[in-house]
Amino acid sequence: MANSIHRASVLQSQLFFQPRVSFSSKDRNSIPRKSNLLCFASSQMNPVRSELSFCIGTHIIPHPNKVDKGGEDAFFVSNFNGGVIAVADGVSGWAEQNVDPSLFSKELMANASSFVGDEEVNYDPQILIRKAHAATSSKGSATAIIAMLERNGMLKVANVGDCGLRIIRKGQMIFSTSPQEHYFDCPYQLSSELVGQTYLDAVVSTVELVEGDTIVMGSDGLFDNVFDREIVSTLALHTDVVEAAKALANLARNHSMDSSFDSPYSLEARSKGFDVPFWKKILGMKLIGGKLDDITVIVGQVVTSPSTTSEEIQGTENIGILDEVQRTDKVEETERLVS
Image (cartoon, rainbow, N blue to C red; front, side, top):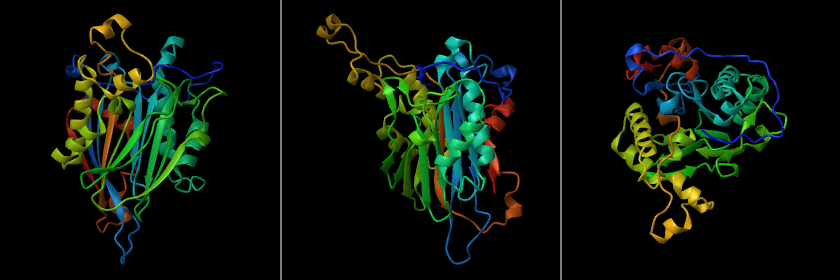
């Protein structure tokens, strides 16, 4: 959750999509969490060469003050080709304009999900961002990241802002995205405004993956509160992707509520000149603590696709936050959808 809106003006725009968010009454007094396991196999199998796909676990924990509406993050996953994963984080500063920051991020992800197989997109995450952004009419802005896995193992990533992605291979982090910021706590963001970032501002990366690689994607609620070394060590303890996603989200939540934890966020704040008053520094004090935020975690393991027909995977084409949030009457349960 970024706090600052980067804008020159605020434009009126028509709401195109507003998902309904509902939680069961038994969870009203607790932070709802949702986990899922999604294993995707390619629908077009090559009998000679093994093809790669994702087995994905997800976990979301809304900001404590935003439980009723499910937070302002959104994500989707798809089994198209080798698999597609994406996260968007609504910019909270829009609440000062009496605008729900979650509307833009959720519509953006809904549009991205619908364009995954579009011929013009041609499996290019940067073009997918362009089309999804152009189709989003809600007022607001969001950071966003999309990663698309080809069956030959090539992962294409496009990122605008401070959502992130890490790739871990044999216990070592081999790839990490870098956040884009105008200034501290004001990331690059796709917006309903004329002046703002577009798909052309996305950082685009291509990484060749192999079987056994693990991908961690998340909103800044994860990466502001959990160090990369903690991500690696947590994955070493949890081979199941659902349990790994849940463990990382819970770790981020615990750090975010710990005023004595010297978090990645507090380290960055001090590096940008934000700190306690000088007299406190003399006493050896410094600015520390986690950052309360929505937390979205997607963990994907790269697996060899089993022999599967297209008929066997129908019904798992596009599964994402917009569908999952509407089914949160089973909070804390794990649904297993294996294609």
